[in-house]
Image 1 (cartoon, rainbow, N blue to C red):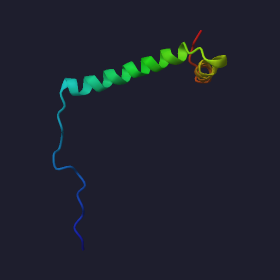
Image 2 (image 1 turned 45 degrees about the vertical axis):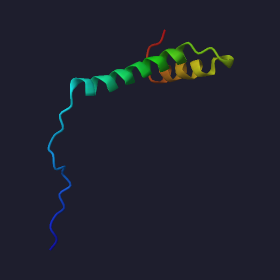
Image 3 (image 1 turned 180 degrees about the vertical axis):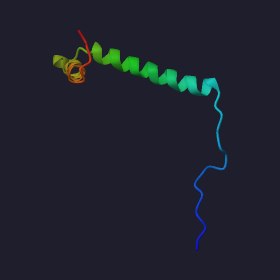
Length: 65
């Protein structure tokens, strides 16, 4: 009979500092805001991007007016 394979990591936990968690979270939040405002104020040919984002907000029952 074979021995069961242990897939658990050899180190039970990895401690991360506040900066190791805060900087990626802040980066993602800023990227999200840039994307939100970029789409919100997109004024291209016939506002296709803006209208698509607007339709998604309505279909998700998210108030936008």
